[in-house]
Image (cartoon, rainbow, N blue to C red):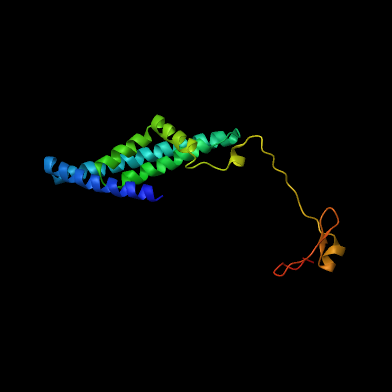
Length: 166
């Protein structure tokens, strides 16, 4: 997280320098219009790509397929939106690159393979087994305040345990 903040801070400084350089070349008004136009167009593109990614997620969920890659793409779209909010030309160029589906998919694959945003191994393992269960308390055991495990050994209530429900 700290590396991302340092990167955004450095990007912001470079963007301020580039804005000053462009202002010297084309003027203040044209520079401001360019920045506003890029932010507006960028927000529309992020919205459009976000809707496409959401449709892919919904389609894969209905087919019961894993959606990890699409979730990473959505995170990268969020980063692109953040980059469009920063005033500057370099940040807008990086955001535009993140909007290109091949670039976004490569970045998502890189993040997923390097386990930067990876989930636990059990969640990704298609052969993992989930066993649902429930606890049944017999009335005679609840009244005595002690219960037994499946082998018949009694459990003792420890200090701080909740009293049995009645």
